[in-house]
Figure 1: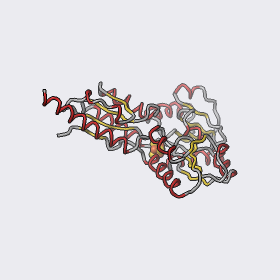
Figure 2: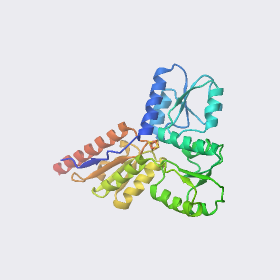
Figure 3: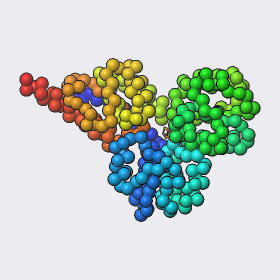
Length: 290
Ligand code: SF4
C-alpha cells in the first residue's frame, strides 16, 4: 500500500487560481499583447510558460503598449495604477483577489472619513504597497509590537492586516494597539487559506517519515510552510519540481507527506506525487534483485 499523504490544501489558493484563470482567458480572448503588472504568481515554471505564450511582465502602466491588455494580479495595485491604465487606453483585467479588494475598500472608505490607516504587514510586499495606494500612500505600516511604541496619536485610527500574516502576530500587535489607542477601529483581514494550509502541513508532518514541500525557492509562503514542517519533522525537503527528487531518499515503507505553497500549480504537484511513487517502486525493485 502506498503511504503517501497529499495535503488537500496544497497549491493554489482561491485568489491565485482565479487570477490564473483570468490570465488564461485574456490570452485566449484577445488578439493583442497581454501584460501582467508584476509576475502573476511567484513560480518560475509558470512564468516561463506564460512568457512562451507572449505574456510580458511590467512594473506599471508606463511600460505598457497603448491599447494592450493589462492583467492585475491577485495582490492588487493602488488607485494610481488603475488611473494610469485608463489613461493609456488599456483593457484592464482585474484579477485582484476579492479578499484583498475588501481590504482596499475598507482603507479607502476610512481614509476618506479622516482615519489614519495602520497596515500590519510587510512594507515591501506588493499587496501592502497596493493597499497603501488606496489612502494616498499615507498609511503607517507596522510589523511588530515595537513598531506600535513609535506611533503617535493620530486621532481616529483604522487598522487592517496583510491577508497572509500569521494570526498570532496579528493578535499580539492588535493587543498593543488597543492598549495605546483604545478607540482604534480594527479589521481582521487575514485570509484563512494560508492558516489552513499551514495547519494541515503541521498535522501531516507529525505523522510521516518525511515531508516534501513544493514551491518556488523565492516564494515566502513556501519557505514558511517548510519552516513549520521542520518544527515537527527532521526530514523536510523543499523542492521546486519533480526533477529534484532523488530515489535514494526513499525506502519502500516510508510514509511521505506532500504539501505545496500557494503559487505551486497542480501539474507540478501531480508530477512530484508520481515521482515519489515511482522512486519508491524503483527502490522496492532494486532491493528485490539483491
Ligand atoms: S491567500 Fe487569500 S487573500 Fe491571498 S490571494 Fe489567496 S485567497 Fe486571496
